[in-house]
Length: 124
Image 1: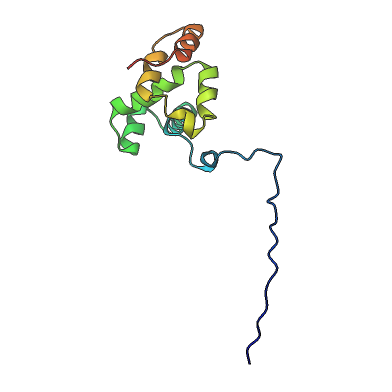
Image 2: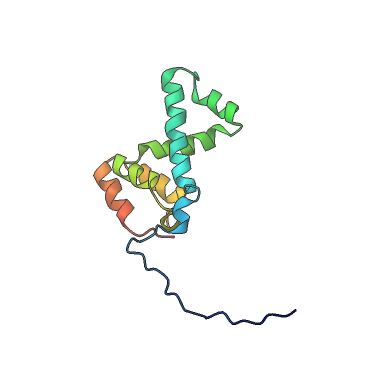
């Protein structure tokens, strides 16, 4: 027995959304520079609380050189507004910010000058 039939095809328009969905990279891991800055704050809190007695011990516990630990901790010298920007940075915007560039900015002791340097395009 064979039954033949046709299914009426009706094109259904796709519903339009009024809300803009966030970019897919917003759900990915945070940028590396944001993770380094958060790590610097965490390590500083460990030393200040007395959990770890020195930065040298931190370097040994983390299996990194004291020089690398110093490079990470220098990020704490950035202006608070720059740090906040970095912590909430999207992965797409983080491509243009380098750790070396931020360390150069952190050498400037005045926060107003740091903000000015941060707003300038990074020179290679």
